[in-house]
Length: 463
Image (cartoon, rainbow, N blue to C red; front, side):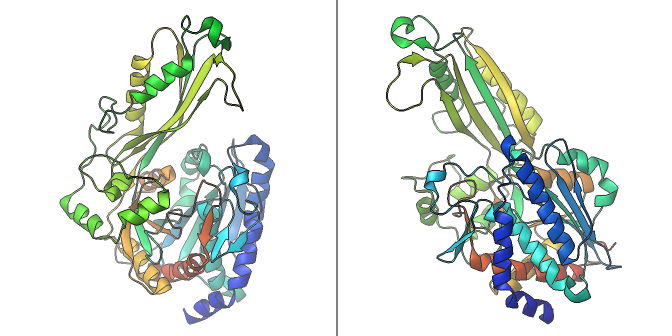
């Protein structure tokens, strides 16, 4: 490993400059105006994969944005790892809140700032640079690697499920690996063993056929905004629990052992509150903050709009009002069943004076894995070598629906090694990634490939 380590340590400046090129492409998947940018980003990534020595590189069209596939399969008798990541990013708005241009990677006070730098371009690039360190000058990887990198993760991974079904033979592997999560905190390398699931909904309430003068018509016609606010207010009870009948049915309770393990983590409630800027922490009674954000289901309104929202006053009754809201799900909650419960509850809350349209944008299952599996333990050892500090096991409050899809489809263990930090503004203005974590992440992943090769025959089958 020493020549690999030496190469990584000698190329830090280049790793930053190459990431700068990657982040400069505005691969915003939710906006049709960026379709060409996503195609350009996929091609840039394909060219880079070929440059570092990956083989069978292919940009595969879908009904949406392209999927990249690549592999290197010259380690007979060693496990085959399938890496998943994404190259699409969230919209950068509101632009006025960025301290530097969102698509110009900027180094400031030990952090790299750019849209997508931590979610997920920087973390994808960590793996590419670790692979390069092994393959340079005709070298070899200690394991076999396949890569699947999509351009639709930020919009629900709409087409990759079909790709997996059609290409299951090509994607066959012994273990899955993902880097799209966070560390518990600065200086705390973390292995993630659980993710919450996600359902995302949109409700539109329609009253009069057009906006009306509130003086002339107020009090005589239904106000969609008033009604929508009343409906949304009834999604929780007075204690903050989700008030949808059946929502908590089957929720897997945390075991005593796991609750003890979570409470031993060096998690600071005060630090968490300071990161959020909230005046007070709130949540489901009987659970710690860590348990609430990682292992309990939630429902949050993500946006609500209608009527006049411009500068100054305009006395109207809007003809329509819309709310977008999502649920985070935990093990034993089925997204399809949750969707039915939510739809039924919304329809029950709606008065006959308005028309309600209910849309489902995405559904994703929760995932949790045993953290004593050999490939997960290989991840722990690699992080401890890369960061020279003890690693911790954590769950993640966010969702990566494809992890569950892949786990169910292949029946293989999955290890999540993330290098972001909770306060790095993923999905928000001034998204950034700690430079030290980026560079130590490359070193850690190189160690992980080496450790994974040592796990062959210890619960990780060789190809």
